Length: 424
Picture (cartoon, helix red, strand yellow):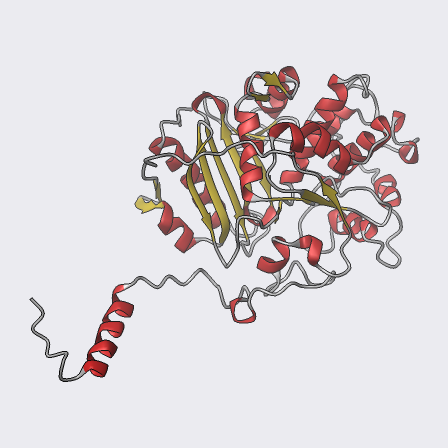
């Protein structure tokens, strides 16, 4: 029974009700939203500032709209493959530093622009943040390396690349006579050229030199100039994993030369259309017309999930084997790697396959990863896929380990909550 004398003060009563409702409803501020551009409605940047705040959210979800950046479209399928929603999605929780958190609490703690979880092809959770919507095409950064690897596998399966032990200069004449030209495709896939290519993300390293050459910065030379300048060795070729984006750049050039098609066409023909992509994707291209295969593929959250599902299904769409299973296992199975590339050997935690990160679990579990928190985790035997797009402040865990540690805790929580395996 309502005992408040609303008939005497109708305006005041309405104001009280509205105030109470506002106080009762949760008002979630997204982490660092003002720094990331909410007051300016998450603006696009320019070719010179798109990687900085407050332009990250806007630019990293619509890079093709940033003035001065050239892109090439990857055509979607005529009909999107279904991603049904789980009828009763189970709750997801995780533990980090001995404290339990929910999935929603993760979103309130970290700068995620998108998060999607699949279980056996069904959407268990899907979230967009910072004003993003389901048609946003999120930049991958180094997740693009895994996409490039899958295309290399397809070119090899079709006989367009004769052998993974061919040297790069067989296909890329601009590298003839250089140390990178004498490196095999397999060694490039494992980032084991043995050549010293620096990647510190400080603007003064070799990856910055390569990026400036890619966009045609004055005085930067051509990408081939930069690649040919890398001559110092830290190890004999094939013996040691050392992360180097240059090696994926060369793989993209091998693809274009070996097939006679650009990487965007190959991505559409060999991945996007067969897997039933819902949205067009796109690659950023350099001044030489070459796709930036080491870090500039852009796709919607659901299509990243579809790619993860294709990998979880061991390269199959329905009954059709879209990807070479043998190549895919060589790329993602820790047991198939030489000792130096296994988990806890290649790095203190991850192993490294063919441009995929391999987790130290008994069940085959692997990831596509990019700087600033871009991730697709996959555990095929349990049908689990986690997609995460982010705008973390730090580029890598060397600069700030906390977001990377909590991301790993979240993935383990997804596995534990949804019937996956975390046994090492």
